[in-house]
Length: 224
Image (cartoon, rainbow, N blue to C red; front, side, top):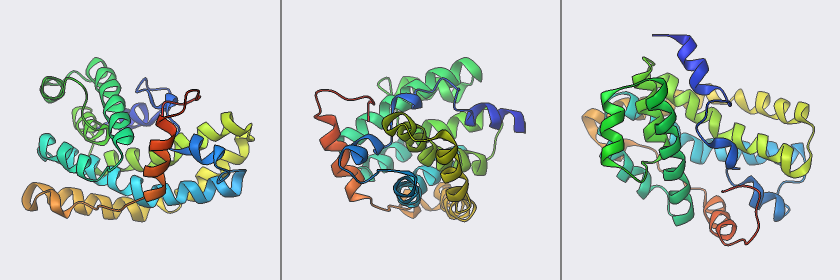
């Protein structure tokens, strides 16, 4: 296993399309729920323990060899918002393009054939980690970190927030990632034997509602 591969995959400059998405932060800023660093920290913490946990478990399961078709259906069931399902598949399609160019792999090719319009991003992330020689825990860490780093980066642009403050928010929230990843990996590793029903299904209704509102805006800075 190459830890350098983990750095490549987790690097924000990896061309996986995440820079075009705010993870719900744009709608939250417009609604007045994020006005500064303190609000951003609350938002990121909430997102980590809901969408982040679900994504980390799905990624771990995919990296552990669970059936990607079953995982994609499980991701759909855990994403009530049509707008978020569309965003997840777009991100998955872009990540798969980058992954196949970086770590050519038969499983990634098969996934592209099975889901020509894109599989859910956490599923693709797990298979990408597997292709890169990484472990399920690595995939879970990537997914968990992405769930908070995207909104933090977006708020720097949306509010002109000091990047130092945004990074400090990430550092504080990151203290909770280890425990969350433990839970995600335990669930993900159980999927091949017990099925997708063991995956967490934590809901974040306000994120779902906000995503639908955001999708209807005529002018927006981010795709989601």
